[in-house]
Length: 252
Image (tube, rainbow, N blue to C red):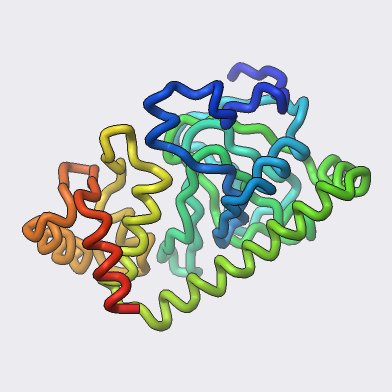
């Protein structure tokens, strides 16, 4: 596993370092999130990533590798430079709920690293990934030394609370069809390739919604017949964002 130093002035999310096609299709800012989800798409997200991980060592991880497991001791915060990560919560009897899926660049595991508590979810690489990380002592020292970083962390935590509140509201007040529309629009923004295809199975989508594969399959087949989406084995493409947005507005 190769390692090399990460320098903030060479961070991969700078537009000048991206291929033009990727820049056009993936015009997104740094997302910051912990196990339960949440993301910050403001310029403060870029500042935070820069301040946290300047001069850290990069690590390459294969798809299927865990960053951490639920109930692990929280001793590090991670920055995802390339790839995508699945954040999942497991019940005592092994049932799985996908709390979030995140694409680079993003920050993962900051809550546990800040308070030293156990991980509330499992983080696993969906694809080959490049990451940087800080241990808890390094994280706290950098926060103590930088008021700007401290303020950025506060904004990040506020964003996480908003994300959790919104997710709870979705599960309480939206039906499965509305939740599916909302999640597909999110995945289209975060994970779609330059052709618009999202590499995700129907079982993964069901786990993301807290629903069943059968229910998801029925909805997707209906939407495909209506021209909302296109479906291939293990891949989905949003064909009409406006129709999905309209459906969501009608059900919110």
